[in-house]
Picture 1 (cartoon, rainbow, N blue to C red):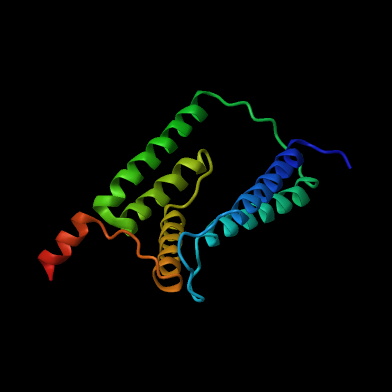
Picture 2: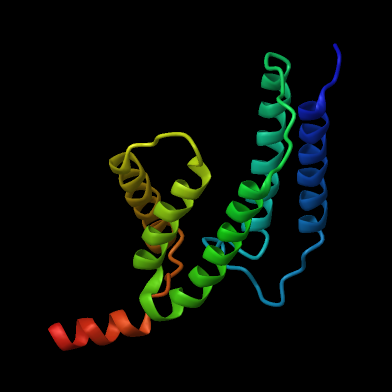
Length: 162
C-alpha cells in the first residue's frame, strides 16, 4: 500500500489524539468529583477519542481517493481571513447576543464561506445551522447541565417583553 498525503495527515491526527489522551490522563482535580459529575477529564478525553476516530476514518477512506494538490490562491487566503474574523466576532458577540443567536449566525456564515464555489441551497444552510445549534444547546443545557450564555442584550430584551 502506497501512502499519500492524506495517509500522513491521518497518522498525524491519530498521534495527536493519542497525545491528547495521554495528557488528559495526567489531569488532577482540585476537588472531589461527584459520581454523577463528568469531571475535568471528560471533554479532553472525548476530543482525543473523536480525533483518533476521525484519523482512522480518513486513513481508511483515503486509499480509495486520489488527493488533489492544493495550491492556495488569493481567494483562499481571503476566505481564511474571513473565517478568522468571523470567529473573533462570534467570541465577542456571545457575551451580548447569547449562544443561540450568535451560533446561528456563525454556522450560517461559516457554511457559506466554506462552500466556496459549490452551490449550496440557502435553506439547507439554514436548516443545518438550526439543527447544529439546537443539538449542542440540548446536549449542554439538558444532558450535561452546563448553561450556555444567554447574552446581556437578550436578557434585557426578555425582561422588557415579560
